[in-house]
Image (cartoon, rainbow, N blue to C red):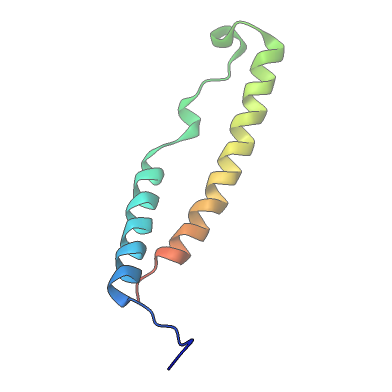
Length: 75
């Protein structure tokens, strides 16, 4: 039938496994390893900016990971 569409299930499963693998690798990385202490950074303002960045990054990665887990779920 002209204009019909199909799905390559093996490709779809491989993509889901790839997303799941990536999410597992991301779970091993932790932004809390970055130390925004002013003594370590050397400047109070820069330390505050780095702390804010790390907080925002943590929240963003958390939500991205949850979305990725949903995409990578193989039923």
